[in-house]
Length: 154
Length: 154
DNA sequence: GCAAATTGGACTGAAACAGTACCGTATGGT
DNA sequence: ACCATACGGTACTGTTTCAGTCCAATTTGC
Image 1 (cartoon, rainbow over the protein chains, first blue to last red):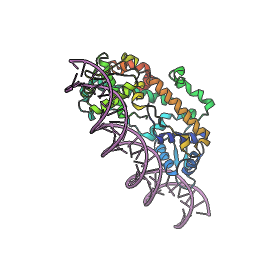
Image 2: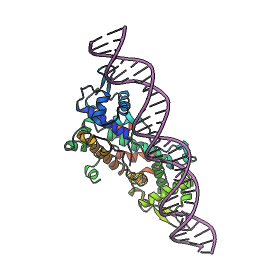
Image 3: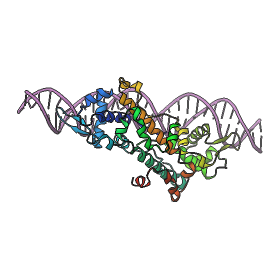
Image 4: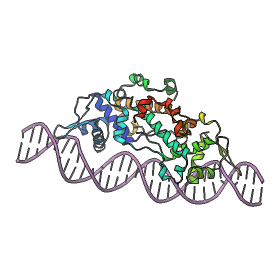
């Protein structure tokens, strides 16, 4: 099925940690120790999250990062986008000779873009607050399931 | 956002081509020429699709491949699974020291698995038949959109 | 028997990715 | 003003993954 990079996954971990105390300012070192990753890696991810306005940074002594908004106002899709950027593994018509002559194949591409929009729309419904909930609260995510019985059969 | 490999994408292209005439037996060479890819690559993908029972193969002279079922009985999820297998880019608790000590982080992992199930459930609703439709017919895919107006705003 | 076509497995080089290193800039405290 | 702390930005490196290629064995129809 579709894949997510380790860094994006780490990104969700970091955001989840931050969501525990949204008002608290935490340094990259503190965060790295809390989530168990190397500081440079965490720092790299934090920068991306800041650039995407998912975190606020404070430079200088006693600096660090904090959440700029409530966890339930941040979607999982936004977190992933912040880390991954926007690349899609699409078949580029221009890179395959004769491809564009196949209208049906180009329709595939068109459909895949639509499908990715479905995926995105779905993940935009899952908030950081829900993500940060404990397993007993996981039932609250289920309102996003296309068909709950179908999802749980997997 | 989430990624799909080029090979998986090619897989959907191949299946779409096959869906145009489901009863027709076509050799790897024929398919390769039709979709504009190299035969070895197409052959490789065809094998995977056969292994996943998404295609039927006939060895020997006049051999080739054909669809074993109607295009509307094959989901996009199945095609992708056939090509990609089942890897997920999850953060492995065991690979990050101290990770499992963070219950909240492990909850993240649990949630991501749920989210991937949502994605999978959604893509299982998109059939090869729909994928093979032309852009003018693309409206038929929209019943899978979580919120049509939301999807089209992207 | 021969030609056509799949099957299976291994190999290779390039690209992508995760992780690292280093310097510049900003800010608070003394 | 100076110093320590901490982020911001960029580039580099080694590893892994992936797409593509190659080849021999097996199968089947004529």
